[in-house]
Length: 234
Picture 1: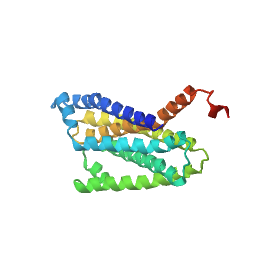
Picture 2: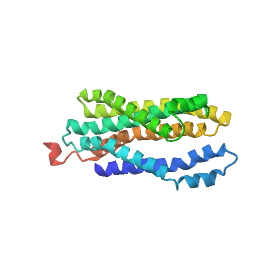
Picture 3: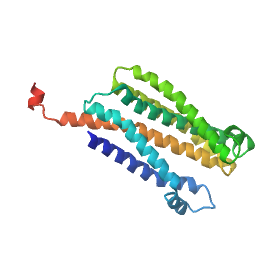
Picture 4: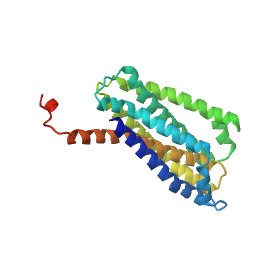
């Protein structure tokens, strides 16, 4: 089943990379002072872009660890089940922080009130967002840890993925209007913040489908297995 997990990760990576071009082309198309194609190509040279891709791929691998063990019928300890819980909590926390940042950018734009909520300009603003992320991660880790009481491991994974899917959809419902509002005001930095919220929502939404796709692969493989084998006749 590890082969199908690898295929799922590669499909996710290919999908994210293929969506990068149209999404960034649309973003830069609103800025008449830039060349969309050139700016999009430049994004592939930024280390931050590949860092985000790396974090997404690693998150997908961690989310698939328990489903793979489940498909191979290997025993799973409570400590192993904490891996998808902590990973899902991190992704959900990132969704929440991105949604708040996008909302603030959409309402206040580049005004001082925006920086007052996110922290002072410069490095303190980054540290403020980082602290908000850690706090949200801790809170959602405690919430998702309660899901471990479920007896069915597959039900636990599906429940976590539903939360990620619904959270990413809600974030998009916040980030898209905020981005439109920031663009309409022709702000400088606010559109980038709201656009990052859109990117985060799309990335986490695609991540939430990974375990479901793996379960479909596993179910398909089991259906194709011959039923007349000796081990199946026992």
